[in-house]
Length: 293
Image (cartoon, rainbow, N blue to C red):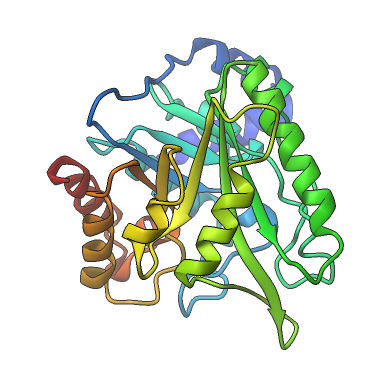
């Protein structure tokens, strides 16, 4: 991002808030692939939940200009279809002109702040279905962590079900990210066993008055063939905060992308903050997996 673009963004934010709506109206919308083609969506909704760490860098995402730089590089690479983010980031990128021709998925429930006492209370504090439709975006994403011992899970399920119904009513994608979760020594952990993922998928795909426009967003786990047999819904693979070497991560994605029902990748930190910080190379590698799957 050039210095003058950054200064213009700051001025637009301060003195010309109407330009957000104007930029959204000018944006050329992206299109969903058909047939065997797969999606590559860049995710950037972690900061709004207070989750700024990547690997061993606990504050990796603290600098907004740096994050926007990385996002602009990623979104400009061939094969990248769109963005998943909260309103603040979406609107920065709209004002910078980086979303023309891209799919935009609005992140909806960011209330379960990382490490908080109320982390399982995933309230809808960002987009809702009406605002996503009004902005001309393509869908909404919701985190659905299911903790059997935490009573706030019931409200999260109800809210997610309502959002699915409302999005479908607008003809928009509802992207559900389900996890079977619990607290371990006070920290929220996801059970990534095949059995737990199948339980989470089974609950998540039943939310709402219709599943006609529901997509799933799930991690790559052991036994992915078995996990994918638990649903007929279109499924995107999430990248998460990579703990393995890049070759292992990309290898696991490539294998899972060949499974029936898998329709692409939604990846954030693994591509925006790769080892060596070569964002373009990491995104190109991910895009090549989709072309070869």
